[in-house]
Image (cartoon, rainbow, N blue to C red; front, side, top):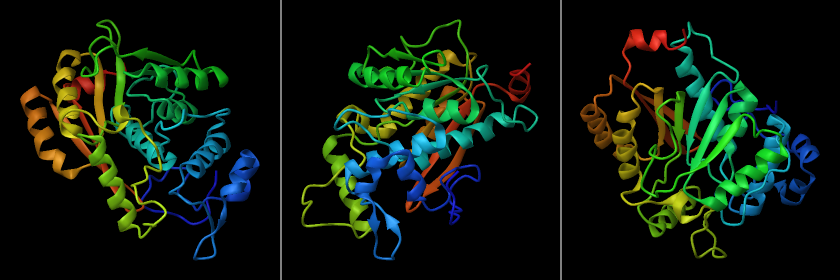
Length: 313
């Protein structure tokens, strides 16, 4: 575990609450050394605007903290920030523990559906390494699934992570889940924007707020990359999550907790109304933050308290 200075905004079990120990990380991924330098405060860091530096850091973190080797994503595909993705999984484990006498359920008996697993396959990699959970990952992008499968094969994880191609770009659960299967959780990091132009504008605002604008990058830089399908969809985040809620009704007996990330607080009023209309029995909004970025997890279930308690029996 790499920990030096505590960052209290991350989950208490998050391995990335401390400042990165670049000496240890470079020992796991030597290529990272080329991107490390002293920042204005005299601390070792990388240029987080540089996609290559972010990818090298991710490789090191995944190897050092989760034992993942030979991790890579194709050019221009999403290269996610590891601490935030880990936080989502830790909060979900807490959610499951509520119906398990306060104990986090671990092992392959816990099944998780990752909607939009992506080329990086990040949630299954961290979730299995941390809690031993079994995953099904879906995506509309065949190239992304090929990349994810290569990572799984390289780490001998194909027996605990199954990938499925979603044939419809507008469907969520349809065609990739079966009537006879059950999931303890679903998770999703949905496309947040309604268009690629909106995504670039958001990236530009982020770097301006961080004081990292540069004449060298007159075009907004998406430092974590991302194909259009990963970044935007019709109706943006609100439209995607609304469709997810609508489709979840048909699987109300097949999943304990449906969950998704929500990036924009303005999305919440609409999806709360959608949950009420869908007949969700319970819903939670779990606040998260990483540095200056704030987001939240929306979770809902169609099961009452007794059904939730009986789920693990």
